[in-house]
Length: 363
Image (tube, rainbow, N blue to C red; front, side, top):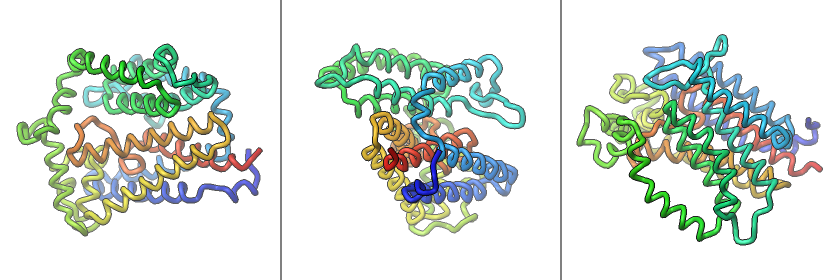
């Protein structure tokens, strides 16, 4: 728990940037679907309220409790992922959701937080060998990552699996890996690429290749990227104005309230609005890194860095995806894209970051 004096050190920058991004997301979701499915906007408000409540709960909670219960959190996360295959809900060819009474959750989103907490616990409990981690040192944390990675990839959810993969390597690299080990892993990864390619489903292969030249299949795999570029480009410098976008409303742009919401936002608010959103994300990421660098203990450092890496990779991959710089892999934009489980996960992550920053002054 915290007392009133602790709020003197409350991270208002991170908090207000998060609130700004969340409100932008709510406005963007409303603009994208109010004409066809206005009820989605009300659901978004519902998720925002729950997410903000969990954010404040994470602020009040001492983050060191996460270290104590890290492996329990990890085990519970794996159990939920396994339950998806037994009693989960299927949609669009994927089995990713669990019905819990009046609402539905996506356990793969919670797996991201569980992975960050567990890796932070594991790495903080082990002294880093001189020169960095060896291949042997990476076996246990690698297995910690591979369990949820395999379960999420099986759903299938390539986007979330990639995020889990990037979280692991980001945290392992900040702990430090020996140069020879990195070189060996790179060579082994390159050699395994053909086998990993064969393991992908047909539509996943198409998504990964269509970004090279979407015009080869403009009505199929390249359609998302081409329509996204049209939406972004048509916004120009100042945009068409709020509620006046056409690509999404006329249903040319698929997933315009989820994965491709930034393209819809760019069409309405133009380059000015787009750069403002990117700047807010940059401030959030830099603030997260600063929190990690100034944390009072190793677990807090790794936890803050892992959560910041999670938010960074989501934003970087999504922005690259909608602009055609990266393949379409189904990664949403934090706080902006519609999605209850993802929004709650992102807001909870911010709450933990604020908790870590506040408690660097408490002894």
